[in-house]
Amino acid sequence: MLDLYLFTGNAHPVLAAGVADYLHTPLRERVLDRFADGEVRVELGENVRGRDCFVVQPTCASPRATVNDNLFELLTMVDALRRASARRVTAVVPYFGYARQDRKDKPRVPITAKLVANLLVRAGIDRLLTLDLHAGQIQGYFDIPVDNLLPRPLFLRELAGYDPAELVIVAPDAGSAKINRAYADRLDCGFAIVDKSRFSTDASKALTLIGEVRDRHCFIIDDIISTGGTMVNAARLLSERGAKSVRAAVTHGVFAGKAFEKLAGSVFTEFIVTDSVPPRPGAPDIIRTISVAKLMGEAIRRTHLDLSISVLFN
Image 1 (cartoon, rainbow, N blue to C red):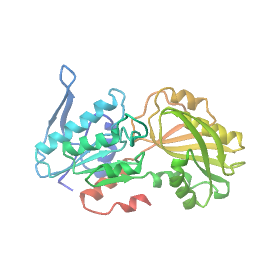
Image 2: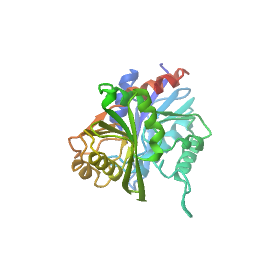
Image 3: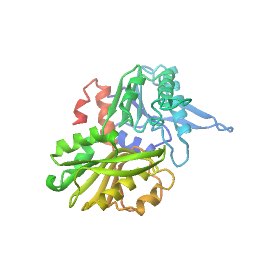
Image 4: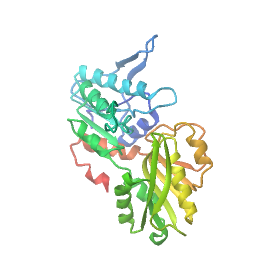
């Protein structure tokens, strides 16, 4: 794979280094900093003409940058690679920002997920490799190939040690019922749904539970946690209904606002997240991080060699 060139932005260099280790390839040289007025400055340190280039950059907030900073870093790096005559440019975006603004659900609002898709395509990417999009239909916003990986193999490994007779997979809302049902069917265990009403984009209240959880270990699986209100309310409801323990596995641990404080005071026994988003300091002890570096690295390897990546969904 001598013509595979791996680059990274400043959003999550630790994850990019893990991907590079898996692929046994170095992270390629580049200058990525700011001009005096704050504008992004990019300069590639190597010749990329005719190379198959991958840029690892989640479009989330990071310790030293905002969501918009990291998004624009990605756009600028893609433009630099395209103008340097790279053969193919793949954006590797473990966390796709603005995915929650995926539809026009009330008057006079944007569909920002589509706007970001347009920006990436116009910048020059040939394909997108991402992880657990908040809404699957976002793949249709692109007129280029999109590979939306799922953390299913990682989460199933975490669940393998439980007795199916004592395990219940819990969907935190109706929208995630399908994916959670797939986990329950795979594990041949119980399944439940928390019904909720949402008062705003960041506030919701769990109302009722569909399914039996008494004296069972409950596992909530979701794609993203932001402020933590939905998760904490769901866990409280499960505990009130007699659950033996309540755990969660979430792909993207954004942990905005007072999410850490909410989780620290919750009934959760354990809260598993992937490292698709760089970890924030001050996390409570119940949070445990598992890496997606091997999953993303294998997807990159298979993309580079024109191999199927469908095996990564199993």
